Amino acid sequence: MMTESGIMAIEEFQTALDWQASHAEQNGAPCTARVIRALAKVREGQTATGRRIANWRGLTLKDAMPLRIAGGLHYLVLTGRDDRLARVYSGQITDQGQIDAIVCDLVETFDTVLLPWLDGPPQTNEAGRSASIMAGLLWLAQRSTPRFDLFELGASAGVNTMLERYFFRLGETETGPETSPMRIIPEWRGKGSPPSAPAGFEIAGVRGCDISPIDLSDSESALRLKSYVWPDAPARMARIDAAIALANVNPPDLIKQDAHGFVSDLLARPQAKGTTRTLFHSIMWQYLPAETQGAITQAMELAGTAATPDRALAWISLETDPQTFRHELHVRRWTGSSDDGKPVLLAHAHPHGAWVEWFGDA
Image (cartoon, rainbow, N blue to C red; front, side):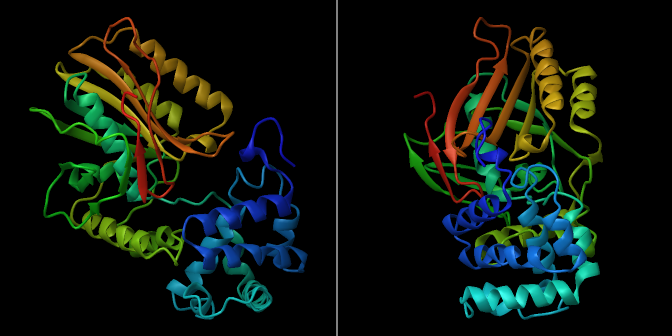
């Protein structure tokens, strides 16, 4: 059932399942889509996992419930516990009835292993989204102090918290260390490229928060994160491997904290002169309760009233429009000027960073 809240409020199970499968297909993961569709048969079964799916409370799509169990099924392949889905993920098996049977048998066999995967939302930490975040930073750098103190909400394993270590080619604009194993080169669409990094452009520090942060230096934790990556998306799998390698050299700065508390604490800190304090996040806002969203927005807007050109405040978000399901890059900035806090739509982007459609100031 579609409600006035838009596509993120789909409550009816089959509608949500069909939408999630179609979304995977449209984003280059048809094999994962077939596994997701098999959950309809799992729901009819007598396993503990099937019963929990059948009695799910809340918004099926907003909770990303199909992706929770899909991650658990991928985990079975990655750990070598059972490799039957490997032929599905590689496209060798495409018959939906055969896939339904495989998935149902896996759930029966590994019921106790798969059931806990339904306890929390997927943590799809995707480095490709940092293309939009970096484009937003370059746009900001032309309009405020180009030395940034960054803070990420819902950082998960901190993959995007490491963006200063990535090489980016955004249209004609290049930035970041050329020798980085993480190379972010999306298809660039739209009106021109983002501005080049100005003199003095610097990411002075990056810190992230998550209510359940993942330690990429821990092999089991890294494997769990990798399980949420769609296996028929090889570029994404390569990026998570690169992020794991970088984190093992120098872990990202992460703390376990709720989003509102994190924002409140960072805004209470003294801000160094000559910096732009910048909050950023990607594809996580939808998971926050409305009251938390409102409290963070109020805190940022209040802090913005004290911003000055040499102690600027900014907010970069790559999030889902709940009505159109487009992923939109918005930037807000406060420098003590008359247009402070006005949201600027800079781009639309692929949910996993395959392309960016740049609007700039258009």
